[in-house]
Image (tube, rainbow, N blue to C red; front, side, top):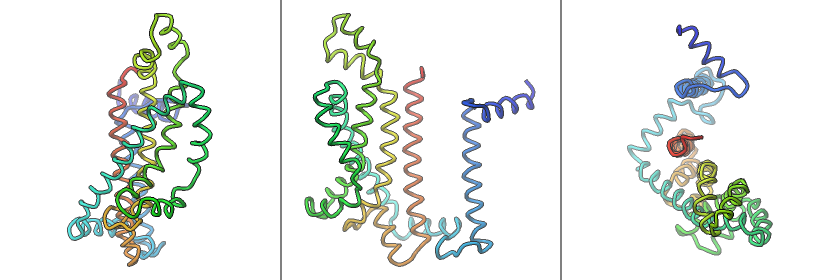
Length: 269
């Protein structure tokens, strides 16, 4: 096939309704999108469209990031935030997985828990900061608890939905073959729900990252949120932008890592 034909085929897949494309094409398009946004961002400051005090250009933000790594021990703050996010996320997973499965497997558990969890998940996490401080103080437990509250109640409902989507025919076949409920759960339901479960874990991990600043402005002396809040106090806008973009980059890297694991584990999809 000629190069022109190959380009036409790739382009046709990109613009067709529910078309497909190669991973290489997706990668180059993603790079192009980031480059376009970065170029417009830099142009907005270079041509005076925005004030550098309120929106510093990418070059200024990069310089601030280098300074933060060199002089402010920023890598250590990143490590602290990373541990906090993953600790809260794993605690949420360990608690949400059995409860979500129980809620979707036995109607009594679902009827008791779903309305309450539905109510709590709509409570704004920032509004719960004062109560969390009263209950837990200003230590590390408060930061983990705030991240947990932003993750657990969403995750448990997603896990319950994943289990509900397992075809009833699978369960009936298991019972027909003489399997007990635990065996059906272990050998039938869990493998069937696993692909969508991993996808939902990726989504909720992203939510956990978005609550990081809320958790780390609570009497904190470490973490990316602390660095951002301190820079805000002294109107160091490039450092604020650098911290925000660092959170976005870390979240993106975690997201892509789980995507790669999903493709590797579930090649049959």
